[in-house]
Amino acid sequence: MTEEKVVITSRAWLLDFGRDLKAAVGHHEMWQVLISPKLFDVPCTSPYCCEVLIFQDRILPVLDIQYLLDGDKMILTKDNVVGIAVYQDDPTHPIHYAGLHLASTPQNIYVSDDTACDLPEHQQYWEPLALSCFSYKDQAIPIIELAYLFSSVFNTLQQSND
Image (cartoon, rainbow, N blue to C red; front, side, top):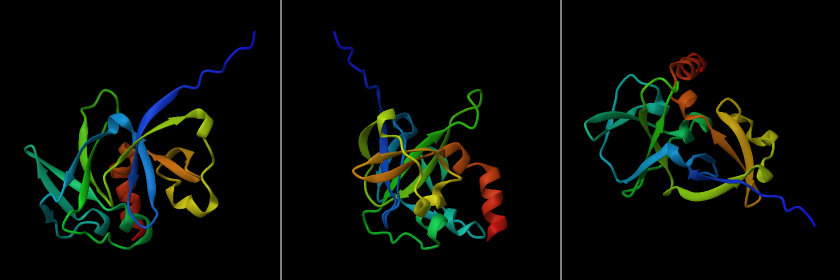
């Protein structure tokens, strides 16, 4: 009798930031998706995170990954998409919310250990944010750590690099 290998899969959200910048987050880390939300500019802030939105009595920062990684601001359309992400910097701390500019609505996918791969050399810009990486439709997709992305440590490093 042969033993069948059981492949365990996990749900994730595939996020498209435009210009072929894609990453994933855990299924529980994408709370909602807003189409054409009203955004407010915040002067004297980092160019990759210079907007906020007001959602359910919260003021949420909205991060532009495209600008953060390649210095080009995402071109917004009248139907721009903002994903509301949730994260915790520590399991004993409260949940935080933040927005991410997206080129399209997130795609629900399944990921398994069988698809794990190394982050390619040409995608090393993801390295500080990537928890791991997997292959999806012949493309390496990093799984990003939202708590670090929105942390004061990361943002202080980014401001010192500007």
